[in-house]
Structure formats: C-alpha cells, structure tokens
Image (cartoon, one colour):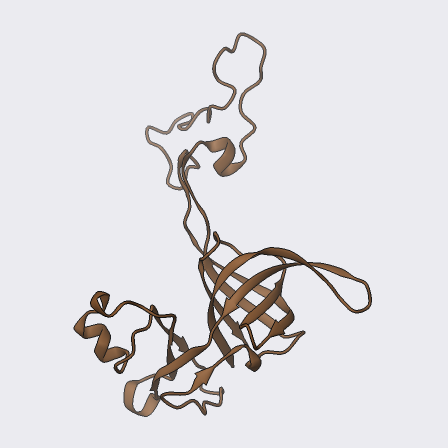
Length: 204
C-alpha cells in the first residue's frame, strides 16, 4: 500500500509524448514523515501515522508535540493497513512522490468546496415551477413537501440548505506524471476542493 498527503494546486492540460492531451489536477504531494507505526499485537490494529507540512511552534499544543515526536507538522494522519499489507515503515522514514509511478490507480479523499446556503434548484437540480398558468414568483420554489394523508415532512426530504464542504472519496483515478524534484503529482481528472485543500492519496 502506497500513500501520501498533499495540497491541491490547480487544473491544467498534460500533453503525452504520443500527442494525447489529458485534463489533470496538479498536487503538491509530500514529502511526509512517518511519526508512528501501529502494530496489531500492541495497538490492536495496523496503521502508519505520517506528518505533513510545517506549523509554527507556538501553535502546537503539548499533546500534539508528543504525537509529533518533537516535530512541527501542520497535519497528522493515520492510514489503516490491512492484515495482508506488508509494512516496512519505520519512525523517521521520509515518503515522497517517488513511491508512485505513472499509471498507478489512486483513491483520493478531500473536502469539496463550501457553497453556503443554497436553494433546491442548485442543490438538488430541481426544475422549478412553470412560467405560465397564473404563477408569479414560484420559478425556483421546491413545491409541496407534505403530501396527501401525511401530517409531517418525511425524513430525507430534499430541501434548501448548506451545500458543499463534504468529505468526498474518488476511486480509480490515475497518475499521469510525477516530478520528484518539485514534489509534483499530476492526477488525471478533477479533484474535489479549492486550491490549497488537503488531499489524501492512496494506491493499493
């Protein structure tokens, strides 16, 4: 299992040597440091904890300092391992983009853009009401929310509300290109989130 943390930069086009063009997302990935290794025999499960980025010293709590083993990382993340996964990681190891190679299939997790309070047309794709037959201001209204014999609103009714800011996992993405010197990873397609969003990248 290969994994790394990074930050989404922006989208671009990548031209392959055979002339094909791919839409890609540029990710500044790693390097990350292994801060702790969890073993099933001692901790009850297998996992690797890694630290990414840097944080100002005065912003780090005493509890965080203990978990970071004296480091000053911006983010600490655990990656669970299956019992079948071989784990050769040791505390202090450095992981960079060179663990991946072009063609690897990825699973990427990040938080989508927050869009604030939105109506049903934008949030759920409702068509709204007709523009004729006596209607005045109901073009983007949700319509009936009750119905017939019910005296309550059913659970799960699609209504206006806060949109975005959800943790989203995308599977079967692909590494198109990587550059170890600048810690750059080009991922085919788009990734959720704004520029600067933390991205978790896993390949099995």
